[in-house]
Length: 300
Image (cartoon, rainbow, N blue to C red; front, top):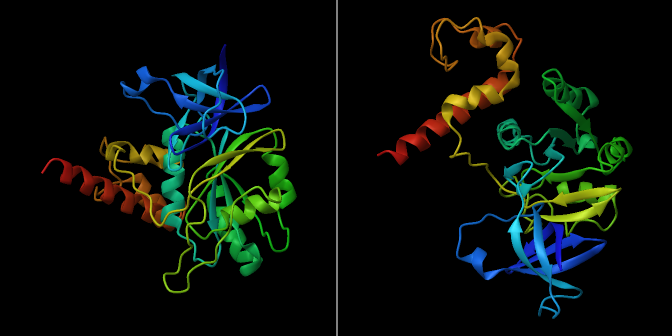
């Protein structure tokens, strides 16, 4: 019997697919292996329910025959068909990285997934410091939640916001993603780890992306990382993913304008006047330089 379901996770060549209140342990049909295909957590698939159990199956088994068209797709973390991308950043321990946060927001926009920002460990900084960070992103249209798993600040509102959504939680190692998920639903996420004092960032405690039922929808923890690589992005299109630039780009003399070295540039003027956050413009400059360097290496 052919069924349709959602991939909750993959491990060692097996795909765990939710369908009709059950989780099927599935393999890939042989003809798919001979073709190029992409299959990740969150994908909708067609599969044939198998009469025989697979070795790794605790319940019903199946054979995936087709990956259905995606609504959207993220590359960091690698997931598909998400309603929300919750981008997390710690306000302290480890120190916040606005560059990584901004890279993740760019990737969410590239992948067509609405992004929501969660600033964790609010108990470790003064309230006005947390609000100053949140304000930078709220003023350009991002929804921002400031939370503390230690005091419970902001958790109830965040839990309600994520209800009935299919959501992936991503961010650098050590920002408290797994701790956050465990606070929202005890026992949801895997083991949590402390921030290394030697290297100043977290240890990777989550090894693969796993969708878990949550409040009428799904939540996914995802592996942490130390940096974000965006080599496939076209440098010419980067400015379009910094949403606050659009308001000032009409004042640029040149078309196109890179907003870096040009003598008359509305975006640079807006930064100087305080209308665009310096941290955001610094992220844009760094990402643009990285993309250009990567492109040059490819054509050497």
